[in-house]
Length: 224
Image (cartoon, rainbow, N blue to C red; front, side, top):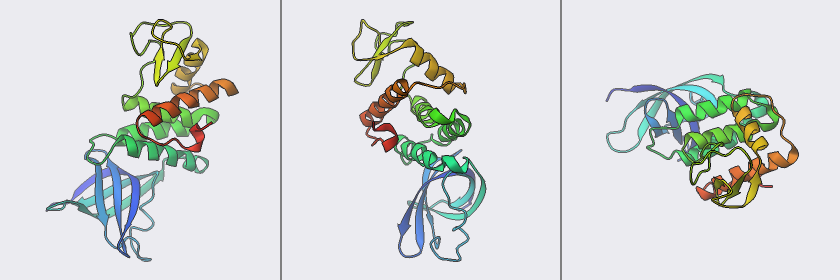
């Protein structure tokens, strides 16, 4: 069977037997796939230095006749993040892994875009901006200028209730000021905005609730 080549991001590595790995990838043209990397745990394996998350990868594999294919080559490109952001990148990667399960045709472009936002954003708020962007691309968020229930435009304060941003006519809950919404929009566009401690906490709480509602366990970054 002919080999396939694609750009990829490594999502997860699972030990298999004493010498191999099962690797989960987001690929540009083939969605999320799982491949067997035979011998990848051996000290002299050609895969050992290449199978790293948060690097641009070019992978080659041979599809299985039944079930999982076999990884045959990996070429590792540059890191996608500055060294100081690698831990935050792992959080974004873990969330993307839950949003786009095996067989999903999406994930590669969405994760790349969020990692780019993380790498180039306002350092103080880069992680929530990257996660918000990822959730938005997955269709789990509405926009910040309209009620998520009635779709009415809202210029003043809105309210966060049970995972929805609402106008005053549709519900009450945690108040989300127009200033915070404008600041989040600016941060997502690459602006250099510094949120107050209170507004930063509110934004992270919104993200925490959305993650929980979709079965994703929040990390410490979004817990309090």
